[in-house]
Length: 285
Image (cartoon, rainbow, N blue to C red; front, side):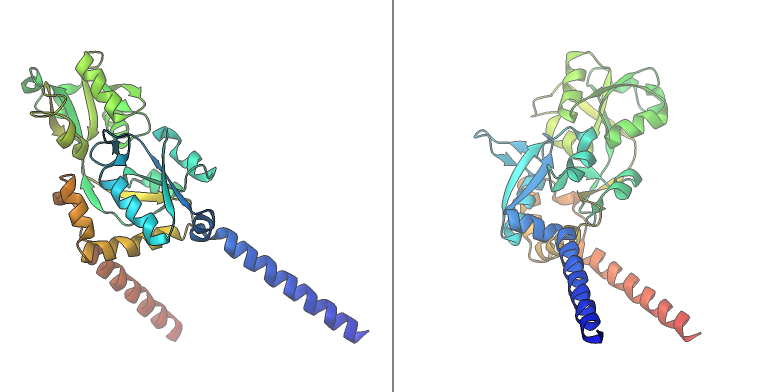
């Protein structure tokens, strides 16, 4: 009887270990992506981060970095256009594996996703027709304007915080169209996009960016608890130190906005060491 009980307990332990092993494997986003052989990247059209060239291929700083990251994982990359307001739903449903599209690291994003380290500085900036821009020198001057904003974006948050009227649209590019067509008075979009899309030498020479409403940082979002976030942090550090990140940034004119990944890694190491020291001191008491 004892032998039977022992064998039964051993079998149960093995079953339990197998269940935990399967659970651990299921929780690994990296294993999931590598098993299917494709990293599916959720994006919107957002020059200079994600946009199509004349052959219909997705390019841009974020797109090129995503291609390089996928290559480092040994998988292909697939870009899928999403509605920005549904980005967390898309992640959780596994229709995409990552949101990589000049995404602002705000409290809502950090709570809903597993996010990478910040990699670019940005701001939300007001776009106005050039012929009236001189009449609106501050955000307070703009209280009576109707703002076109991308639904679910940091720009929408900034305008709503001011209490001003908004017209939500699907993309930031649509917001520019609204102002150009005169159906909205102004738009709020990312400063990096404004640098590429409005003003002299662009497709919107009649528009200018004026007042910056905030300062912010971009990050990349994965499913909550995903181990791909740390893998991307390691990739960011390596590509920053070997010059790949800056080379890609220079291609799209965003090199001045890059965040020093070596400095971030050093800060993280210092914080980890401080936490370990504090834990040792508490244990010794």
